[in-house]
Amino acid sequence: MALVLERAALVPARLLIALHRTGMTADEMAEQYELPLEEVAAALASAPEPLQVEDLDWLEDDAHRYELWDGELWRMSPTKKRHGLGTTRIVAPLLRFLEAHPIGTPYFAEVGFRVGPRRLLCPDVAYVSNERDAPVEDDEFFPYAPDLAVEVLSPDNTRPRVRRKARAYLANGARLVWAIDTRRKNVTVFRSLGEPEILAGDVELSGEDVLPGFALRVADLF
Image (spheres, rainbow, N blue to C red):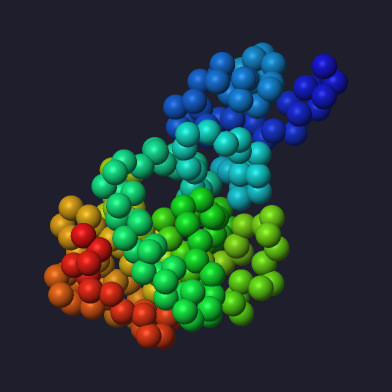
């Protein structure tokens, strides 16, 4: 019983409130976090506070992926076939390229990158150069955005949300962002300078100075 009460005192009430706002019930939280139901109810009755990135260390594995935006918890639903294919078709050539040119490391889906004091994003695909990757401990979130962030549009990951994410990535260390739209069969390229560029068909998606030598015909993604 003492261990349960100790855990109840440690799990931030603001995290339970945020999870409740995403749709998790009090009963589900009590079971997931091994907390007395009355402790969960008391937490939900308290005044809400913005989440901190550190609060996400308490998240338990479930069927969802979570991101943090200005203290608000975003819950991402399990992806469907369209989204999975969109991710796979960029992952495969990226892996082949990095095997031949080991200049950095690719990360997928659930790896968290800090893009502000109360923001933690998990791009569908990310690339971090060896120089930037080396200082980060294995059990830490990345303290900055990846060199390249790839977002695949979905019902959760809408075009306006992706635009906001792209700006945050670029403001916190990213040099390139690709937004893949599997329905329209195009890729929007965001850079730190200039307006976004939409590519489609036989046009090549280039790694530019982030992945020198990487190029892929946009049509091959679909």
